[in-house]
Length: 183
Image (cartoon, rainbow, N blue to C red; front, side, top):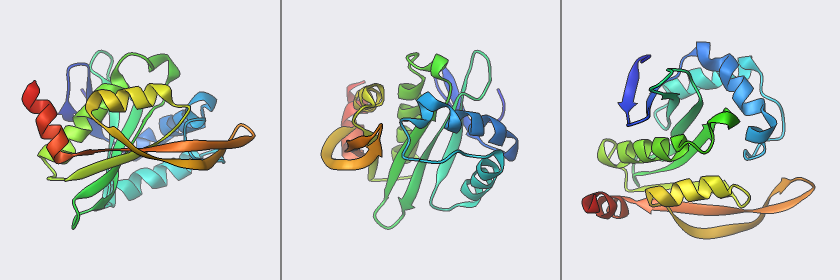
C-alpha cells in the first residue's frame, strides 16, 4: 500500500501527490468518465497537478485517491468539498476513472469510507452531493450508503444536445448513526 489514510475491505484511500496528475488527466478526459462530470473542456496534466496542490493546501477540501488493496494502483479520486465548518456541512464528489473498474463496488465502498470519515472524524452534520439523472450506477451507490434524494434541479446541465436534470442527495449525521447502529 502506498501511504494509506483510510483502509476498507477492498480498497484504501490515500493522499494525492503531483505525480498522480497524468493519471488524473487520463481519468477526467476519458469520454465515459467525462460524460458524468459537469465539465466541457479537456483537462491537462498541468491543470490536474495544480488542482492536486491546491486541494492539498485547502482547509475546505479533503481529497483522496482510491486504490484497490489487490493491486495498489490509482483508479479514482473522492473528496469532501466546500466544507463549511460553522454549519458542519460538505459536498461529496467521486470519480472512478477507469471504466473497467466500474461495477465492482469500489465507488460504494469509497463513498461509505469517506462518509464515515466525514461524520465520525470530522464531526460533520450534513454531506450532500449532486448527481446527473443519467448516472444510475452512482445514484444506486449513494443510496446504498444512505444518501436520500432531496430534490431535482430541472434542466440544470446541457448534455448530449439537450438539458438534463441533476438530483440533489444528502445524508445527515443522525441518518448515518441510525444506519451504522443497525450493523
